[in-house]
Length: 383
Image (tube, rainbow, N blue to C red; front, top):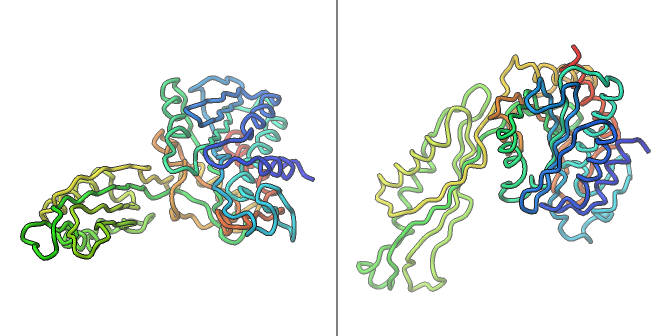
């Protein structure tokens, strides 16, 4: 068994359902400490994070710094009897490694660790620094104590990441065929529309929040928020849940609750979207309250960025494919690193089975991934 496959299977055996780490990060920390890395375990609430760096002048803020970013937490497996093999017992069949987290993203984490071990062994006195940032709070609903908190710590100690490679599964059909060069922003809101409850036979004595919200909803869903740009599609507004009523057909409800979300491009900002939404509600006479949650601003590593050019070249040379350079998909923890001024690129295995029953990664892709990550280190720091 190869070194990356051995580590990946060890990680998959650990039932690290978010936000639990189940011993993954201490295992990795011990390995990197033996390789001469400076390792910090950062505990916020019940979330464990790991920050490991290596370099001749290994102190915060002493760059340039190339960091790899990943997570050890996984989503729940769902009914284990639906799997063809136990989700936390790694199994190889038909050239694939099966298990929860195989693709998202314990395979990438194992590849990052092995690549960094190989890099510092081959180049012990390398210029600059390399780093590995791992969290056990990526798959959860809030992400409050993971990379978001670590970045706050970085600001306090003067740490600065120049380039960041995120190991999220990015490929469509074969390793290297797609990389993420940016991500849309995500802005969510919990909207409460206030009415007056009453009897349906006496509407003049009540105020139906459903009726009050309907014209505003039409306006929100037909609004052209922006036209997008060369790198991003137009901003999307969606209502993901709406609820009102008591369950009785003779009662006008007194309130309505709706969950809304924007996935937005760099052509808009979260602040501008908030203000326009509130203006539309006010213009339509809606009595409301609205709580906003910004998951992350849109970010882009533009064409010509050094890291972007290197990753494209590595995929071309080692995978024999010209990668699609995309900003699609949801969000990743790269959204917390990009505001530091870092170039951020996502490169990982095929994402076809992530979060599914029988999640898997091709063994040949897993065993090639450390070569890609090591090549990125060498191109960014040695050439």
